[in-house]
Length: 116
Image (cartoon, rainbow, N blue to C red):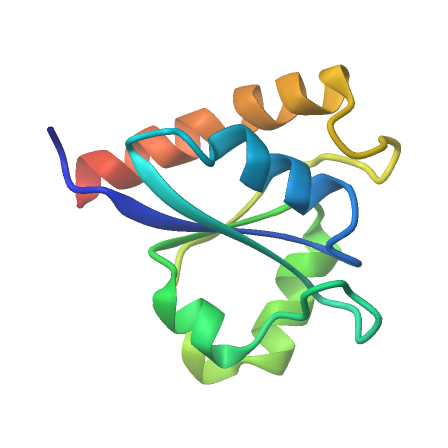
């Protein structure tokens, strides 16, 4: 089996989207997962150590990518940060959200594993 990669899911408040993504992939043998938020009021706020841990960062919207690049320029310089284009329209573990996460994240995860 290919190398297991570390995937960090990021949204704003780490309340619905990124924790759902973490739960969806928690038992996936291809990845180790964490979720964080960019807002100071996030349940788990992102730190430089999270970015150092990650092999791949999957953000829900472009604004999350821009925030990471602005707040952590050194840590993100060579780190793949991909946008899933998932709006903040869903509750935690919403079945539609879970399907959107899988269909959006799987191609990026597969590509990262292939490169690993």
